[in-house]
Image 1 (cartoon, rainbow, N blue to C red):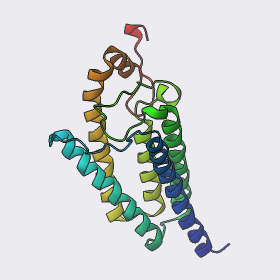
Image 2: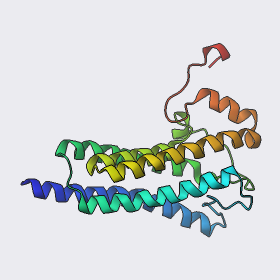
Image 3: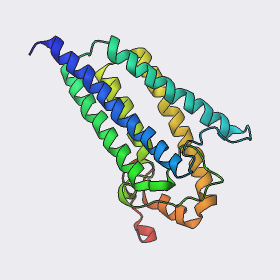
Image 4: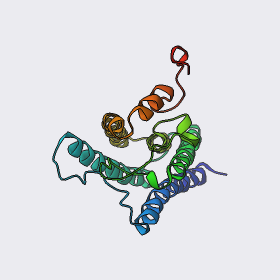
Length: 205
């Protein structure tokens, strides 16, 4: 198999990674919409406070990085097959993590702070080892595509989107104790923000 065919297959693989990821995202939105649930609540609040602007910028960043990824897939020549394979593996892992997060969250899944919705704190399944597996899925997909089709512009878009997602997590961490109280505080003490469980021997964990 010549190098050009390998690159074509890598481009197809990159598109497949994105299609799987965003099909899960859009599919969940549509399924919950049929149940009367507004899943996308990013920057939907009437109050123009810090949370609103962080969410608005995050939304622009996450939409923009998708466009940058697609452009790079079709225009950038991969650095090497090694980077492509590593990126593909990380990208598919991101798809899997995101799928697990969305399925485990069920109808409590929201994009953005849902201050008016009656949701449940989910701590089972993948949430036993990550408080934010959906965001972790985003990061893996961003990193995977970046490794496959590295470009400085894509790097800037990807890092910016990841920073905004992280800021969104920090906003949620301020909001969730008010909603779930001690249950969330205890959960936060046991499970890491992105991956892993904390050693809480002093508190009996």
